[in-house]
Every structure is written in structure tokens, then in C-alpha cells.
Amino acid sequence: MKKEINDKLKDIRLIISDLEGVLLTELELNDEIISRLVKNIEKAITEFKKRGLNFAIITARQKDELINELEKIKDCIVISSTIDKVSAAEKILKDFKLECKNILFIGDGILDIPLLKKCGVSVAPKKAKREVKREVDFIIKNDNCEIVFDEIFKILSKLN
Image (cartoon, rainbow, N blue to C red; front, side, top):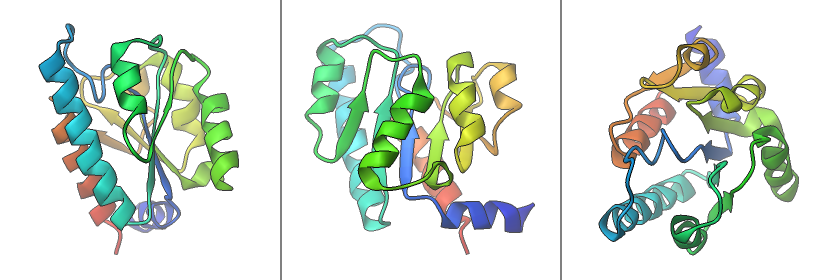
């Protein structure tokens, strides 16, 4: 299994994350939470870029203050207001001339399962629905955005 995962990790060029339940674990938003989320995403993108990776968020969340702030982040692709995450991911793949095997996707809900099944490496937070956790390569801690990114960097470091 280690060689199979290692081979999959070698192909990863794009990290895609769901928003609610993965990067955003708070139920109520305020300026401090939004600011912390933006800073953590910016920091992670810097690290992803050093590894030759791009970053995107695909969420069903409707356009609001949070989405507007996320869209301002340099090198952060945000697709909101969609429940068809496979089609959204395919649009990003087309722009970057990549394939599904090049995606590491982090999702937690039933709507994420089609993309989790299709992507190269699939990840779910430990708080995800049981049906979701059955479909993934890795289960990570997700107490906050910073921990999610730390866990993703640990997964990427498994690449030998």
C-alpha cells in the first residue's frame, strides 16, 4: 500500500479543499475568524507553491463576505455556490492542463464523495461522515484550518 500511495502522491499538482467542515470548523463567523482563515490559507499557499502545487477551494457556500475575502487571496482559486464538485474540479483541471490523478482533495460531506472517488489522493477529516471516511486514502485531524494544512504537509512529506 505504501508504494501505491507514494506513486499517487508523485502525481499531485493541485490541492483542492472543501470549505465548511474542513477549513472552516466554526459555526459562526466574525472578522477575527475570517482574518485567521485567510492568513492560514495564504501561508499554506506559499508552502504549496514551493512544492510546485496549486490550491483551490470548491464549496457549496453561497457568495458572501467570506467568499469575497477568499477570492482576494493571491493564487487561491475559489469556486463557490456549487454542489457539483467534479464539474468544478474539471474546470480547474482544464485551466491547468491537469488530470484527476493530479488532485489531492479534502472533503467531509456526502456531496464530496464523487470527487473523492475520482481524484488521485483523497482525504477526509476525522469529523467527516462515516460514508465519506470509507472512501478516502487518509483521515486527518481538523480542529482548525492550521491543523488541516499541517496534516496535508505531513501527507505530502510521505513522498520518498
